[in-house]
Image 1 (cartoon, rainbow, N blue to C red):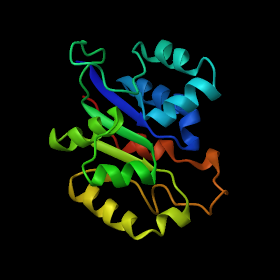
Image 2: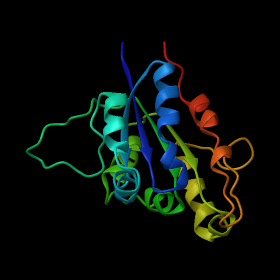
Image 3: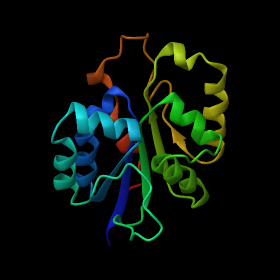
Image 4: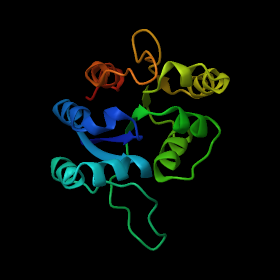
Length: 181
């Protein structure tokens, strides 16, 4: 039986290394599909020429970033789990509020209602983390069943403009995914 994982990435620096979790999830037996927020897609398509095509070749699926038209067929298999990484504070706050104005938000908002396993690995700085909305957001998402890996044992926010891309804990998020049978 094939299990499908959607890796949903927001526009944060770790998105530039999205092939890391894709390859690791594939090695664990997942069929991986990549979905970017519109800004993350722009980063990948304009700042890294060939990245979208490389991801499509790696996964065997189109990379999605916007809603399809009602007359169009779905091009991705339905997900069995979602990995939202990197998750920005902007997307997290919208997600907790139930906003689905992008394909990425629509999928993760719907994922809660479908009771899909969802792992979210944030990436934001300590100044963003200090905003009062963030605590509420994390509480709402965790209460909805989302595994949010923020704090010790997950992602620890860094000082503004001092993020270490090599320290982003992709492995922690992958370890939190359901085990395949």
